[in-house]
Image (cartoon, rainbow, N blue to C red; front, side, top):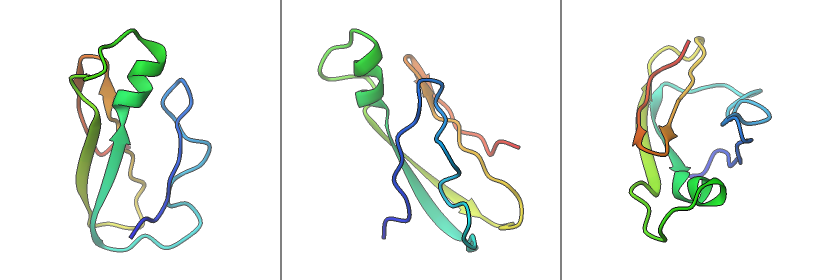
Length: 83
């Protein structure tokens, strides 16, 4: 089930939180970042980019706390919980 879709700005942020304004459930979720499209739009990359669609599966254990995913640069990807 898709909960939200968003496009990031040039700085990598969305206009609003992806799950803002509704309860966050204790669950395992997946964020799919289409970074290949993002990188091809701003850089000269081959059609087959090193990273394309990057799935990030994460668990929400404390729904009252904020969660933030940081995804990628042109040369690598990383994820952390954020604040």
